[in-house]
View 1 (cartoon, one colour):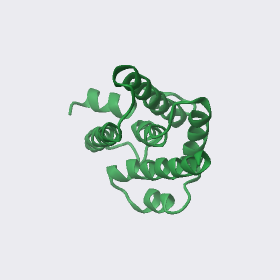
View 2 (view 1 turned 60 degrees about the vertical axis):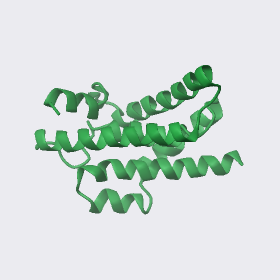
View 3 (view 1 turned 90 degrees about the vertical axis):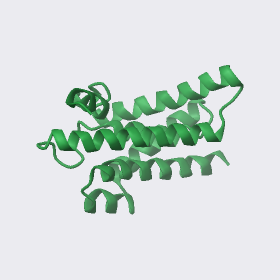
Length: 158
């Protein structure tokens, strides 16, 4: 993967380069993508299928891992979990939001929950963040935060 392409992917078109709250901006992109997929698939096929959601999530994870590995090989000066890398927030927030109907309550609560888990990093998210120093770990802690946020959102929805 070329330097420019990898950098565009991991910074989500440059959002990671913003001075203020780049992770929050990346999360907002993930939220909007989840809502977009729901609305598009509902308009086209009458609804969203679980197989599509799993496929879209796995594709996002694969793209993020590939871009992470590429950027770490290119930008060796970037520290572990550099703040400019926000593709992981996109994937984590997408994972939180895509499994629920795109109504304001779900979107807002899912966003707040994901950002809280991503920033506070409770156990086991903290373990992954502090002990793993591999490009996948940068993404995996956000996948765990997204899963935890989705679980809490699921409890609130019941």
